[in-house]
Image (cartoon, rainbow, N blue to C red; front, side, top):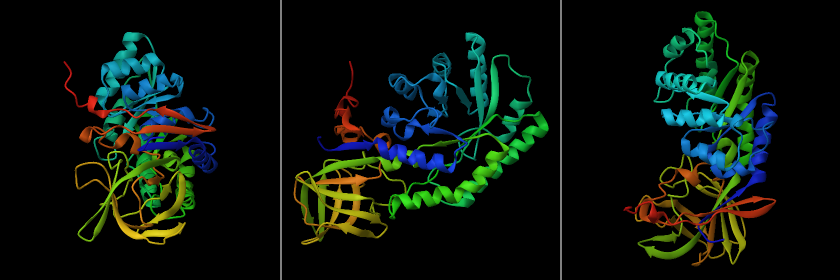
Length: 395
């Protein structure tokens, strides 16, 4: 393995899904592929994960390459064009979302053109650019039924990294209000309410797994009560994927500037991102490897090292930076570590969600990392790729 690289562990992904299923045994689960498309090959069967949320034609192509059946796809996304909708319907997507009046009309038009039928859920906005207002949804529900389109439910997602019960209760109150009005005005009763709770996953305060388990149990009661009234599906990405990933980057340079020991790594913030990280002041799970062996690790806390294994003899404070030419490329602002050597490898844990796709990968034309999956055996999913080709003028 050549740094920088990601290592995703299928068993951790499935253990997290098992946790969710144990709390919500009667609800269909949806995995948002945008959180980590490299986990598609580790996806449990449809009895455990019923749907995969796809938000672009590219993500649909990823599902096709993974031979995911069309009837497991929930085709979503804030920007849909005729060609996107045509491809999703042709592929046999089980459900399409309509995030606007135009989306709804485009889906209906494609169904009329192709002679195919589509199940549609209407996305309710939480006050941002996603979805549509409750009034527009009610207007659509009050119209005459289309021959080839069936509106089966409502889709709602109001944001990510929620950690408070009140946020979930507010979501469910908004949904209940709309659904009661829809029944009153349009005699509409959904067969599916697709709800994304957007739960946070713990990155900085140990014990991580226990804290995540406490959070999902904290919010479970109102969600289960809502599920007694309406068939509910739960859509998650971050909460499912976060524990499954590690990112490895090598120490390439060490220097003292003023009174700060700067470490330069071959990775950086273009490949590693934690939600809630503020100017690199928080410490995520971090381990130190030397000559292939782990010699030290810490369970991160908001103020730095919390507990550690290995020796701290000769420890120093370091500012860990990446390979980009920007002062923003700081992975950890201040941490006490054993005295580092060039060639040491730092492993950042719990980065299974979003890091692999969300960073500005083309900045500075640095090489894209290798990606490995441990699923019984460890296999290479993607070789390191040169990103300069993205920035190259083509003739």
